[in-house]
Image 1 (tube, rainbow, N blue to C red):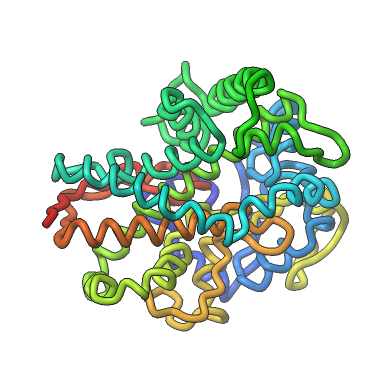
Image 2: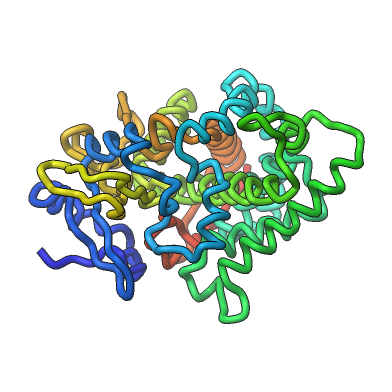
Length: 399
């Protein structure tokens, strides 16, 4: 079967769910070409994505990085120093000192501050009425929360958010020009963070993530300013982009299912389940890559050492073997074993924070605006990695 879901154009009108469903039935581990370089094995079933994730030594994040395209040595080495692209035991050495800071009990202490930030954002939106929901509203919450967690100066938040978008939206010509590339965004953000780390070392310590990163030992040694800069890129881009996508995609899903939106307004206790369904239905990332470290096989398909393997969350999250009526949006779905936060070794460190941000945001949004209307067609980001919208025009009518 000749298919092409590597091209960003395959996602221009939304993920190719019908194609994925057919391939899950007929060819759940299939080959996909990439123009100009080696292609990859696409892993489409929930059980197989889970299997790849649970064998991080056999399926390496570090060997070739986590994106499908082969990177030059400089960019690959930068990626290898990000938590998402480390293999064990190094991954555990870097992750373990951070785990306590992201536990549910610690994250719960942020609820009051997240709620205050959300109310401020929504109050500004109420004054406008008609808004572009992605950038006028949802982008501000993760930028401010991450800014405070890391201890960034407020005057730098917008600049750092712009660089995060430049990195994650690199396949869309509306964001990246010939003078302004994703590699430039990564370099600029890393340089900013390196300079920020150097300044912070000369200042009084604070109880934030930057002090944790600069004072704790990772793998038996402390981070250099350069180490911090590379680590900072992942921390900020992941925290910004995925949360922004969850909030904007979540609102659109609810607007497209008005009966469920009405139920959610009537019973806000449904919100935690609704957030999980939003994450399943509109997972922020389509895939992450691994590289086979030795010869192996999946579903009797031989995979050679060095082959690229892509875990397609967009497909796995709609696997009928796991989810009843998988193509339907259902805020009552329980259990909901989606893979949007990954699993096992690389389960998302910020999952509890993202869930908290989602619950608080929608609580305040639905309480403040009894009427929310879509006023134009949403525009999708041109990307085979980021399952996001770049525009969602809505009208917010407050009480």
